[in-house]
Length: 344
Ligand SMILES: [Zn+2]
Image (cartoon, rainbow, N blue to C red):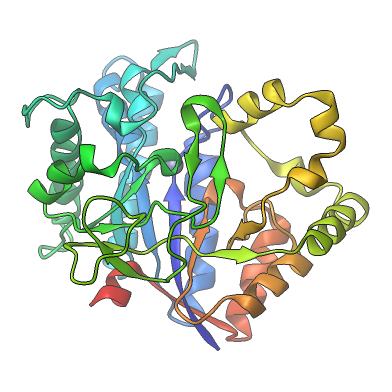
């Protein structure tokens, strides 16, 4: 059995089609919770809190949004009561979202937290410090109703866009947040405003740092718990692409929304790049069941060291990946713990 840290990003799709709270958050998360119960596994839930913040703003005029808010609240409280760890996940572009004809319309100028202003205004959500402080208070006030000792200690940036870290570090410290889990060591994404480059970041499962998670500093005041990535050789990548194409043709059929990367990616890739896409695949892959399938996940599991960190998006869970998770938990190959369990 391996002890693995499980983190989930609890959120809607953030592209043209968000999917519904029920189908993309509540139902898949409920299934996951029931599997975790089988061997008393726990997880850290990175809650896209600005979505909830917007629901509170809009619910007076749109009763269906109040229903959404209540569903989320109930599930978050259930999670907290049963020992799961709820932590902060920020997608600041929610602050510019509009709700029209029953759907969310986004614009992405403020997709990165650093795009908010750096004025020292704790009660203005449009500043970095305000956004973190208001979100933290919202979460703590709610969750302390069932768990009086509850505290936010960890953060995951939306889209992994944590850099330049020094622009947000003071606001995190001011709110008692010392743990980050936004880095996917070895990965990079050259997708315009969504781009990140983690190619030369430490591959440790946990390390300390000060001004940037790129540089490990013993005794540094911040702790990084990166999302584990697994090295995949070119041969393996080709084999898995092939397997995917012939054996798992319907994996994406259950997808209920579209992400931002999805729109952007398809627009940007040239025909040639698409045809030879296998040559451009990254050398490492996230340790996840998201958009994954059994053979590839089995390999990742075999390679993942004890106390690796997995990421799962409930919105991406499907029949196949739920079955993989269920098998691993039922046969006790994996026991999941939360970041809170890991750092205490
Ligand atoms: Zn997210």
